[in-house]
Length: 132
Image 1 (cartoon, rainbow, N blue to C red):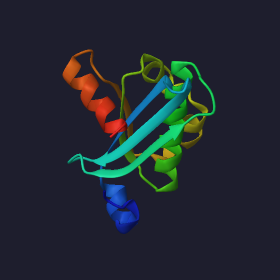
Image 2: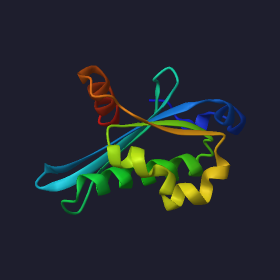
Image 3: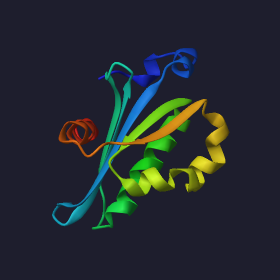
């Protein structure tokens, strides 16, 4: 797995990153889980985060929590070009209204959210990357 800190700030600012976010309810012992994975444009994994939540939560809430954690990570690491992939229609529809994004949108040169299609190939590739 690549280490984002080994990349210089100038290189990180020029590079486009992909983020895959996902969340599941009742995954382990009726507790929810969320995950996100950051890759470079060649799908080399830069960072992965998996978290088992304290209780069962609504799917849309979990997906937005994953979105927020990914956004915090990108801001902390001074990433300014991100394409986010999700299978959550809630995140896809509401990401522009997200408070964390609204307060920081000027820090991104490129920031887009794309909804993974309904085809099995697209859905499985995003989910597998987030939970790899």
